[in-house]
Image 1 (cartoon, rainbow, N blue to C red):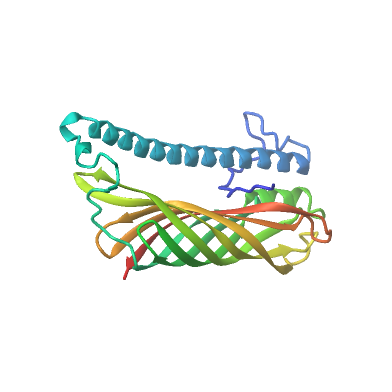
Image 2 (spheres, rainbow, N blue to C red):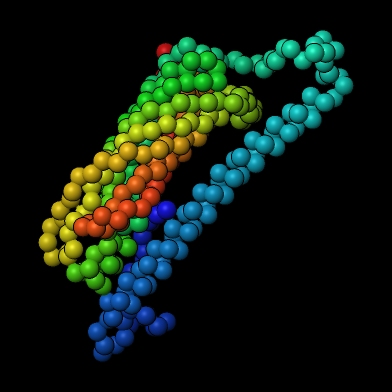
Length: 285
């Protein structure tokens, strides 16, 4: 499966660096392959750094949530709070203090964020979502995402080093589809001495990813795109924070798995991913 990452940029070095610039030697023409190699190494460094930072934040947040639930479970084991004798057959399942209800309410959300879909593109997206909660745990959702793309420094370096042998570049243009959503966990946290309630949801469904394949093989000609549409499998997870009865804040990670051709002219295909990280606000009606 092909994976991609959003690139952040590299720092250009000036020729004749006193520390030994690998891109330039006095009296010698810079080697374009060396330029591309250095650019790719620096691009990879930033990509790994951003991935590590993102993983650290996500894992840290999940660990914090798990720790808070463990502490809550330990508190519930205290005999002082043991009321199991009221229901010896465990026929009653109560979630205390569910202050904000979702069942049979629609939710309209508008979110924005960044996406990882092509190593030679930096992508941002705007995504409205419409959700209808069938119950406190289950919901159906429809969404549409519009992407905004630009080339990054890795593409620029390769364009200089190999202007007549460009790699395959496919950028996402839009995405739409539907999800069945499940919210197994409802919790609350103390934020600056205020209680914040949230749901942790998971979703699965299908959709269409509209992409544009750059068909040119040389930088000497203008970019030429071929529109494509791929049917994909979509997985989603995220948090829905209840600020009050009607105002919500939503954090989502959504990945689309799709099959597409490997090259501009070939017929061989492979699996690719488009992963979007979004933060948005919503109104519950």
